[in-house]
Length: 340
Image (cartoon, rainbow, N blue to C red; front, top):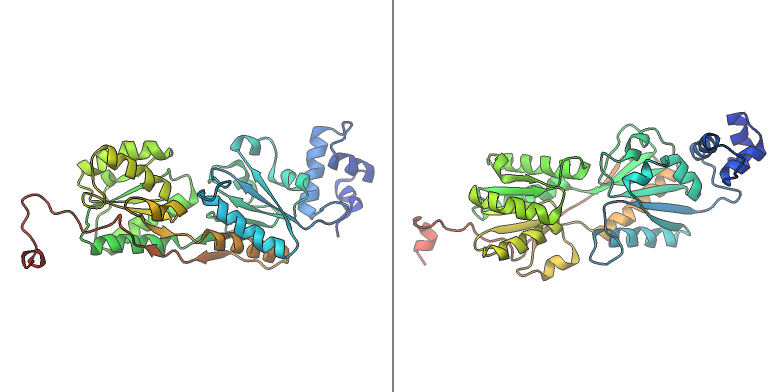
């Protein structure tokens, strides 16, 4: 177990100075305090009494309400951690906070043995530091390849998107739009690439006029739905359920019927998806299982088992928001329709 003496020896300072730095004493400079905290975290120091304590850092993700995406992930993590005697702190974050303190310092201050990171983007200040950190860390829907102390937990975005595009293709849709966030997020970039690959597998062109990249959810629906319809979209694939729900609202405002005029597919299967009118066809992420896998992966890293990625299946849940492609006015009926 790492002691204060070990940290003092590494830094070439006294044990008492290390103790003062860890306890935010006023007679230790800010620069030295930072060095002490970073060294303590790097060496795995967890305080006088080792605590079985993990942290879940959350950014850009709701988690306090059962209808929010992060709620079940955290519940699953806590369920597994609690059964093994681990305490779990949940800490909301902003980019601004990350700019005032390093990841190593934050871990040392909280006396956490490791962390599970939810909702981070590729632009977050801590992401670069994670490439070299010695703190066992699990990322949800992010990926850092070169550090064996970092692991990833996610769903099969490629498989889910391919199933969704194939489902729409089988219903006769050929003009399938994609609505998602900006590509500064690893998961959004992965889903964008998966959509393009799935369209190619179905022999469909990727039309830039049928792709909408926008950060704000409601604004993305208002901005892109008219453009999609004008460019002949008969189906809209949304990179998350929140965007799909926003599209529902815009369709109602524009007197567009779902799925008679346009089919909608989401991603996540939030609790409210099954109760939409009509119920939302969506790609399911088992969020409780993701949380459990997050804990399992972190416990492996703590015990020097270098896991790279755990990936869960993401099945397509077909409901009432998808249907056959609308018949164009004046178009000849198909042989099947003519026989009815």
